[in-house]
Amino acid sequence: QIQLVQSGPELKKPGESVKISCKASGYTFTDYAMHWVKQAPGKGLKWMGWINTYTGKPTYADDFKGRFVFSLEASASTANLQISNLKNEDTATYFCAREIKGGFDYWGQGVMVTVSS
Amino acid sequence: DIQMTQSPPSLSASLGDKVTITCQASQNINKYIAWYQQKPGKAPRQLIRYTSTLVSGTPSRFSGSGSGRDYSFSISNVESEDIASYYCLQYDNLYTFGAGTKLELK
Image 1: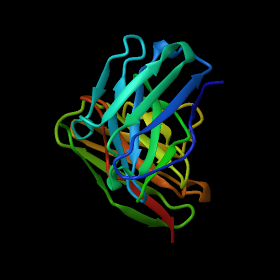
Image 2: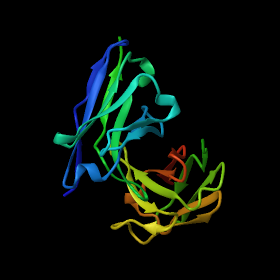
Image 3: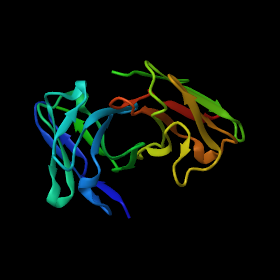
């Protein structure tokens, strides 16, 4: 069965970096783009951008240009999100989601990143 | 960028009621809208794509309609398992979520 399994929760200090992963199984990884979605505590969903899993080319939403990097370990069917120079407002749950022609069908379970001094 | 205005922010319903949520896009999105259900602590679940196509496993009490800039999502005969937050997503030009609607029991 298709699964996206994300890494565990993270507690970081402001200014540090974090890298979270999303491991796909049950389908051909390079056939579907992978997207990232942020959800701050008690807030709605915000699209961060996506990565072409065939070419490795990332595309970032305007609010996520600069400190955010999408990458792949294609041989391991894994997509990664790295956030540098963490700020308090980066505290959120981050989801990966597989793209189909009608939006996003499968989602990871989410990774809670807490930024606190 | 396309903006999605979702309303209402919250909704109170009794079991068996029909409820409707709307999303208005800032421009024509050519029916490229999906609807998601999210329960606390869980990932969103896709219910509808391309305005009105039910995703496999979505109960028939859920429905969607609309065109151009204006879209709606309805639940007829609300059940207790439907208590959740609901989001629209446009995917005509990049991607934008609506702000969400929290459905509660009256």
